[in-house]
Length: 127
Image (cartoon, rainbow, N blue to C red; front, side, top):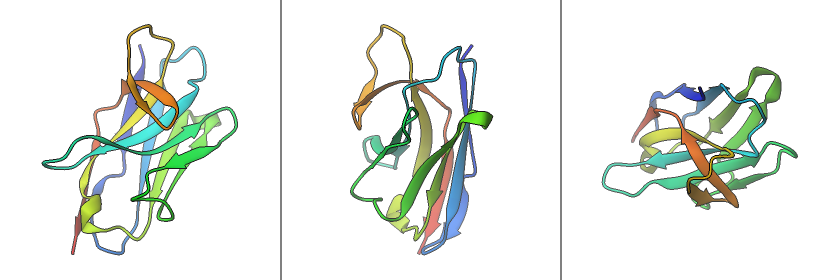
């Protein structure tokens, strides 16, 4: 059974940094893409960053570009989101996501269709 487990969320002051981690288990193949999404109070879920596992290329939302960095460690089956220069508007539940070979439709973002999701880790940025 596939599991995505996020960690690293917490509270930080504006301008600070956090590093989110997502460990992946249960896959019998390497998912094509891994990504991070967030859901802020009163807003719709939005894509934050995605990485193509095969070549490491990444796409970022305009709101986080230059501040956030997505990376992967294939040996550890993990993906990370380094978040720097955090702003209060970055406050949200952050979800790790992965593509799969399931036939059901997923969430399209950054050229990938995400079908597997973690439970989320909450980030609070205070001013």
